Length: 142
Image 1 (cartoon, rainbow, N blue to C red):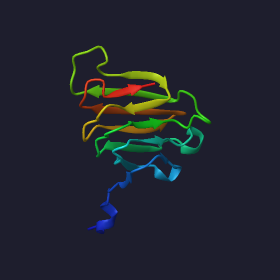
Image 2 (cartoon, rainbow, N blue to C red):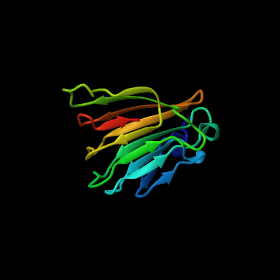
Image 3 (cartoon, one colour):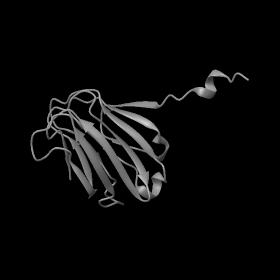
């Protein structure tokens, strides 16, 4: 039996960010594009509000000319609930493949490359972030 076209629609909700943004529980399964040449901060929902399985993808779609793109936990309620692993396409120094078991922010620094990205998933009271950057030292975890 043939199903209606809408049944197979797997499009994601895409939000272009041009200023600081506080992500909401309802933003789960979104793709956030980073579109501010002056940089911005994306604040994740408090883990208690996000719920198990909350997820998003973040993609650099505008190269910054000043400041940086920052992804941060909601520090008013959370502390070091981010666990990250990033791959760097350009490798040659000690900062290749940054990872941290518990931190607060992810910063795409310098002039990130179009397409630098990460996926974020909330599991067990933590945000797990995996991503890739083209640049050596392109991501800093703090």
